[in-house]
Image (cartoon, rainbow, N blue to C red; front, top):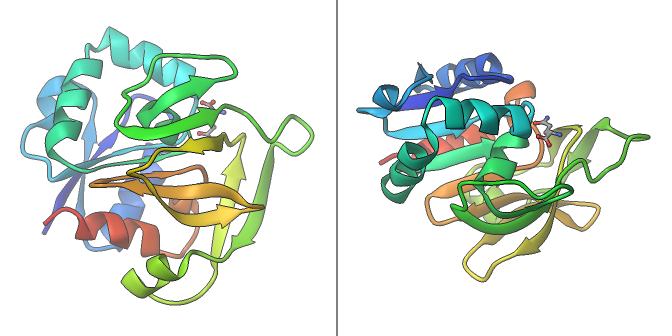
Length: 193
Ligand code: GLN
């Protein structure tokens, strides 16, 4: 069984831990650099990326996370995707820079902060997991404005990428942990070979 760390400084880490266990993995909460030892992969949950960043710096976790990401897969949702991105705007802030994407924070605006949408994942995603459209829960989500050459878009919503993979890492601007569909967590667990 694969052991997946879930960064638990802030945000909806509990929903991710449950999603990992529903998908057949073992979830371990991560709050300090020592907690990274022995993990097969890590999830950075949704929440508030500015707050998470502050806590990551306080716990001296930024460099250990970058180092972990050079060896092992990381999956970030929403605030987690913002932390994984290379460039962050609106406003600009520090990030781990492990996926070559540019994200604009809170890009859907205040009027439509949150919504539940149906998206049709790319054929590649459907063939690697299973076929069918997917529910996507957006909560004060960022928009991925730039996708670098090595990154692959696995799903779009209104033409904007919402699920992106680069090598071993995955970023989603929505919250798969809040839907019953397990395919994004399945895809992540498959990377933990
Ligand atoms: N708006 C948040 C941020 O910029 C992300 C929201 C979320 O993770 N659901 O960090």
